[in-house]
Length: 157
Image (cartoon, rainbow, N blue to C red):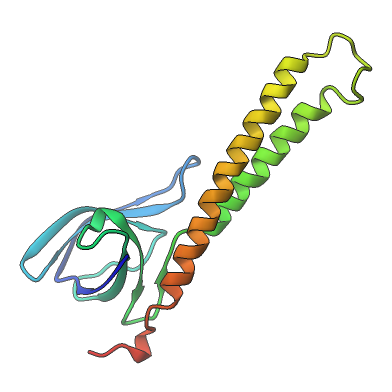
């Protein structure tokens, strides 16, 4: 991962995105130091203004498509991935698994119970929950790394 400090000379094409299938984010383009970068995605709805300075965390050096988040050096605001979104999806997968299991409980009471379908629903819920848990752990590591970026008061101008 790479930590970069950048001042946005220009900010254009800002679009706030909300969806039921993905965490909310902001897509924008910016100009800095004579270079123009398009299609940058930042988690949440952070402040975006020309002249603002941020300390950003990129997964790959120099690649803004791999932006994890940033700390606004003027306000100290942290723009980071949303842990709650992953937690809600894990809870949803547990609920789906419980519903599927509940349809055939007690086992053997209903000889026509769709055992194969129940098994598949529970297996899909477990696999989905495991993937979401992996995503949650990654987001938690990312947020921890972002919190270690210097706050506004400690940043040098």
